[in-house]
Every structure is written in structure tokens, then in C-alpha cells.
Image (cartoon, rainbow, N blue to C red; front, side, top):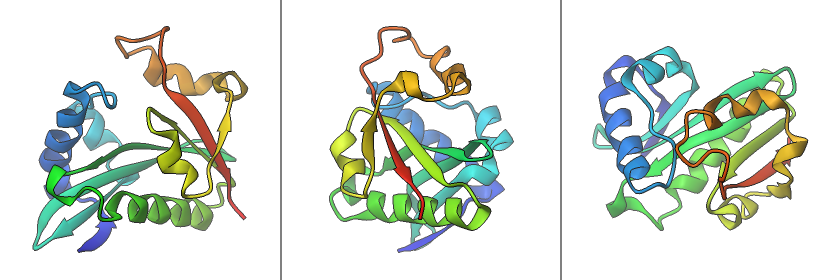
Length: 151
């Protein structure tokens, strides 16, 4: 398995994988346009040139980024692939100078295993709510916010 930054040729596979999870209400759907526009946010895990997992690190402000759209193909779940993507995103955040990374998730313990802590969503900047406005669950969302300070 190889983890690397996504390229144009990965967009349709990213779109397919992310939206499989979105159809099950596990994350927000992403349009092809949105993925193309934010392609530099995405990192993929591939095996034999086949995309098996994806995550994105989206910078929101000088000191804050979000890990979003983590999706691992069913046959590759419970093998540590998602945790490796989180680790890659945290390293990327550190490399670009971001000192806090958060996620909005239905699986907070998954992130806590990587050093994230609970945070009240209301303590995050209002800028994060842009995606929430597109969600059919807004404003009655039951996602949990977690955050990690980058050392």
C-alpha cells in the first residue's frame, strides 16, 4: 500500500468512494467539481494502482485545518489504513505550519486513538459551518468535534 497526494486521475475514484459513505450518512457528499477545486487537500492510499482509501486536509485559517472525507474501501477496513491517512494529514499540517487540526465525526474514538480530544463545536470558528449548511442534517447534527494540537 502506498500513501500519496491525489492527482487528477484519482478524482473519479475519490468521488465514488466518498459518496458511497455519504449515501450511508457517514459523511457529507462531495461533487466532482468540489473535489477538483480542492484536489490539493486530498491524499490517497492505493494498492496495485487501485485507490482503496482517501482523506483530505482542508486549511481553514492560519492556525486551523480540518481532516475530512476519510473513507476506506470495505475490504481494507480494520487494517490501520485510515489511521495512516490521519497520521499523514497531521504530518502535512505540521509541515505547512498549521498548529491545530480538527474533525467533525460520528466516530470520535477513532480520532482519539490518534491523540485528538473532544471540543465543543461552538468553540470552533464560524467558518467551519460552511459545509454544515449543505448538510441535510443541519442544524440537528449529531457529529462530534475533536481537535489535536500539533507539537
